[in-house]
Structures are given as structure tokens and as C-alpha cells.
Image 1 (cartoon, each protein chain N blue to C red):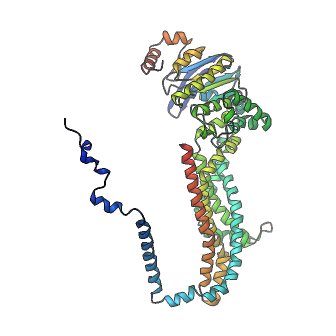
Image 2: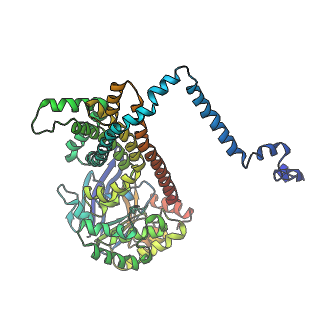
Image 3: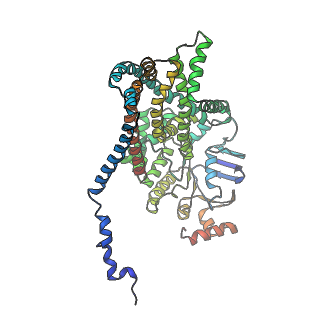
Length: 290
Length: 246
């Protein structure tokens, strides 16, 4: 009786690689690392060489990377950046609260809550529809111009308000997607215990919803950190504004590089942290399912 | 009568699921609902616990109409326990917190008191060692038993069980069924939707065959399983026997 091909003795060659395969298999070991290093050096070295050998490089170097200007501009820009950090911290406190409130308003069920749901929908639609820079301008210049005694007239206050309102609209939608992702059966079993709609949301749904969206929320934090700079258009002396002032005084752009480095100093660790956390969360979840 | 349904109708959109259900369950009685998928068993239980509003008819608990406007639905749900097919424990809470959530938040019982009672019940149902475990760390059978304890801790007047063994691995079915058998022996009033015909025959006082949103036939298990009155019931049982489930 004829044997199937894979039973014939020469089929065993899978165990000792064919001569032609050896070449590929030998690439295992140190080779991949060496190739990675060499190609990285070639790529970035080439890019750097392209910049450095460009005809106008000496001028650009002087205007953007001047060590003296760096030293001169740094203290003021750093002072301004301190304000960025404070506003960042404030908005990080305010946005999750406002956003959660809006998301909860939108998640309430039953005809009695219709006006509340409507309010939340209008809020998210309008605030997400306005470019943040316009909202900053409208609130920052518009509200103080009304000269209502009860309202603060500080541009910083209204800049922060604009930032909070706009980001809260986006963040509310993130929360809502997290709430929607919790299975309906969880709500049923919470209500079956005799919990009210609010208690079911508070104890059963929201903790799961928030956990669902932590990675998405943290990405928002990264972009928020940078968008704080938008309030510079109100003339508030934060990092970008200070850099601008230095530039208009000296016609040297090194101050912008100072500001850039400061933002990067915060956002890169933040991004790394978000990636690390997201990966850890993904692993924890896939293990929990197994 | 503990629980009575009169001409209950319920549709989801265009799909009519309950089409005039009449059912009465006496105190300490165990009633099994059988019938093909989609016949309305689960919907009947959900409606009885006021988790879904009914379109027409009336449901009474201990003689009180619970489907009227203005009824305190949360208060009614506290008097009824329900257990679902897919356990539905809250994954972010330990077994103990799952069990005590109802008493603590819906009834305002102190944490210590609720936990003491919960540990006692968990111990009785063989979950004493798992009180502090999260649901994803214990087996399906343990999840389902914890869900039963969660439904029982409020001392419900009636327990509704919705195909509570259907999501379990076969070797875990027995432990859950034996819990239910104990509850029946203890006099708990229960309505079970189930595919476990052998179990229904053992534990039920009465079996109801549901077909197209109606109770087509009700009888003692010995009668219904051996001499069904209706053609439809006989066909259904024949298919169940064919599948080796009876």
C-alpha cells in the first residue's frame, strides 16, 4: 500500500534544515541587533547630515539653537511654564468631574430625565463643535468685556474655563462609551437587588465604565498638557507667550526651542507611562478572561 | 397565591414574546417553566421582577398588584430574588461585596451586619473560602452559587431562576442543582426556567410548558412528562428525549 508523502523517510528533512534554509536560520543570534543598530545610525545620521549640510544651516543654528539665547530665555520661559503646569493641574482636576457629570446626565433613563439628557447632548454637541482656540478667544475676551461684576475678569480664569469646557465635552463622550460598553445584564442585576437607577450607576456601572476607558482618558491627558499653551493667545504669560516675547525682543527663536523642550520633558514620560499602563491593563484583562 | 400573572403581554418592538400569560404560583411551590428557546421563559421572569415593563395584563405579588403606575418598583424588587443564566456578578467586586451590595445600599444595613450574614450564607453554600475572591478567579459553578446567595441575602419571598445552569460546564451543573434542591426542600417559593428536564421532574411541584408566549399546558411533572395533553408538548418532549436530555 502506498504511504502518504509525509510518512516517507525523506520527509524527516524538516528536522535538519535544507541547505538553502540554513542561510536564513543563521541570521538568528546577534545579527538582527547589529542590523537594527546600523540601519538606525544610517537613517538618523543621514537625516542629521541633510540638515547640517543645508546651505542655510549656520543661520538657522544661530537663530534656533544659540546657547547664549538659550541661557537668556530659559528663566522667563521656565517661569511661564510653571503657570502651564498649574493650569494643567487645575484642568486635570476639573475635567474628570465635569465630564463625569455630563456623561451621567446623558446616561439617565426614563422620560422624566429627558430635559437633563437633552441638556447634556446640547452641551457635548456645541462644545465639541467649536475649535478650542475659538472658544478660548470667545470666553477670554468676550466674558470680561461684558463687565459683569459677579464674574471674574481674569483672562487666565476664562482660558482655564474654555479648556475645561471643551475637554469635558470630549471626555464625557469617552466616559459614555465606557458606560455603554458595560453589558446591559449588569444593570439588570443591580436593579434586581432593589438598587435605584442612581445606585446601580454609582456602584455597579460606573466603576466598570471608568476602568474601561482609563487608557483613553490618559491619552486625553497627554493632549491636554499641550493644549494648555493655547491660552497664550489671550496674552497670558505662560511658556509660549514668554518665548514669543523673547523672540520679538531679540529676533532669535531659541526661546521657542526652550519651550518645546519643556513640553517634551513632561509629555514624553507621560506618553511612556500611558503606553506602559495600557499594555499592563490589556494583559491583565486577557488573563482575567482566560 | 404568592405570584400571579394574568393575561400578561409583552413585545420587544414588533416581536411579541408574551402573548397572554396566565400563571399562579402558590407559597412554597416550585414551578418549572419549560419550552423551546424564545418561548418567553426568560421574559416572563424578567417581567415578574419588573426589570422589563409589561404591555398589558397584571402581575400580583402576595395579592398586591405590582404592575400599576406609582408602585415602588425598587421595593418590589427587594422582595423578589432573581438569578440569571450568565451569573452577572459584578466583576469589580469580591464575592462578599457582590453579596452585601444589595443589603447595604438598598436596605441600608450596616457593613458589619451585612458581611456577617453574607459570610454565614456563603459558608452554607460552600463558598466560605471564596468570599474575598473576585468572580473571574472562581469557577462558573461557584459564580452561580454566589449569585444565588446574592439573590437570597435579602430574604426574598420568591426566587426566580432563569436557566441558571445553561452557561455552566457539564461537570459544574450538579453543584448548582443541588443548591436549588436544598432551597426547594427548605420551602422556598421558586419559579425556574430550565432545560434540565430530569431536574424539573425531580424538583418541581408543577411544570408549565410555554409555547409562543402562552402557557400551553400545566401539570405535575409525572403527568406532563409521561402523558402530555397537547401535541406541541409531546413534540417538544420528543426532541428533548432525542437530544438525551430526559
